[in-house]
Amino acid sequence: MLCAATASGQAPGSRFRPETASRSDIRTAVASIDSNFPKQVDEWIRIARIQGKSGHEQERAALVRREMERAGLTVSTDSIGNVTGRRVGVGGGPTIVFAAHLDIVHPLGTNLEVTKAGDTLKAPGIFDNSASLANMLAVIRALNAAGVKTNGDLIFVATVQEELGLRGMDYWLEHNPRPDMLVAMDGGLGPVNYGALGIYWSKYHFKSDGSHTVTSRGKPTPVKALAAAVARIYALTPPPLPNGAVYNVGQVHGGEIFNGIPQELYFTMDLRSPDPVLLDSLDRTIDGIVADAARAEGVEWRREVVQRNGAGGTEAMLKERRQHPLVLTAIDTYRFVGIELPAGREAVATGSTDANVGVVRGIPSISIGRSYGGNQHTLSEWADWPSALKATKMVLLLATSMAGLPGTGAIGP
Ligand SMILES: [Zn+2]
Image 1: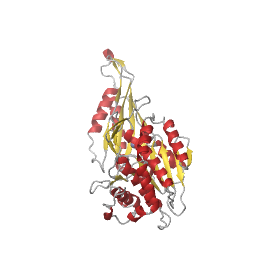
Image 2: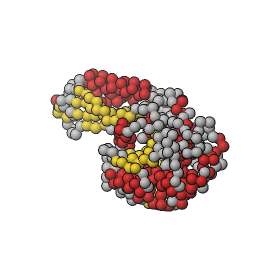
Image 3: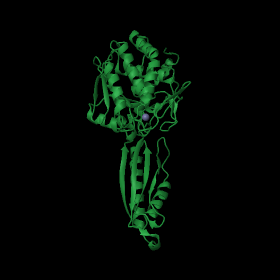
Image 4: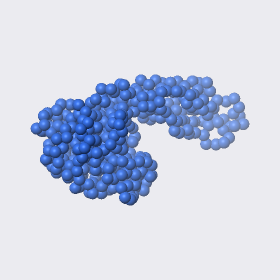
């Protein structure tokens, strides 16, 4: 059952009221989450066993669609593959999107068998993000089982291609009326994320005519241009995260033989910052360094933009957003269900989830956790299954508090 022990330190501006949790409809909904939890864990395991590499989410999407339809939602699938289930409110409240991504990073054919030992589930993708899909379906069923009506509309979206630069959610926001708020269900149970870490991925290609080693003396080589560029890039000293930037050259490719100047090389750049100004200025600086290095060596270069996810702003830029009722209510509901948040870091101005594309559009957007777990994006990924129970209750309380419940006063966005 719910634990009210820590609800007293409620922030003004939060829309959560502890007495709401004792309304009979909400109590019934929460009790139904409790009693159905073993089935929820089974469903979680079922989802995790389905292949779901980004761009190949169809089978997972079909499962989510079927379950949303069974629960009576109006469901649609868009042309990129996002599954959207609408739970229409009685009116007078904000429209809130809850999004959980369907995709995993693991290639098709990866062994996705789930092992359960004690409180731990192990499988690639079990934590990121199969857990959230099961949590989402559990919340929908609990709301329906208790006949909970909300003022605003709740829109549940199972998104595709999150791991490919948030493409599914970005597409969804481009093709649907702007929601009042967005909640990404993604991440461990920790601080509420209300910002967006900007991420630019580029490939820098260098090209030369090449030459046999014997005739190579004094000829331009893309190797020297690449090496000089990478060395100069690593000599940059931007301020560190959380408000500065971080970057990494993750791949260096090119050349096939010992005995010749390679004709083509590239390196990849993963550049990240929450500060849009710093992000763009570093991006231009890096471009300039590559251009200089290529010119000095006399080789061609070109840049291939692989991914660009905008930055949401630094802590100082998002000062007001930190006080948004969505953030405050999320913190309160976390505490109410008994999930500890680090003191002084209950919410952080960063994030790397579907919420990012909302943040950069100016939509109040957060990401919240699904369970405890770790090693995500690896073959040894694990999740603590009992903690998904509290996380699921938290989502239900957040959704009903933010959308508003009839009879508790209409709330605008
Ligand atoms: Zn994720």
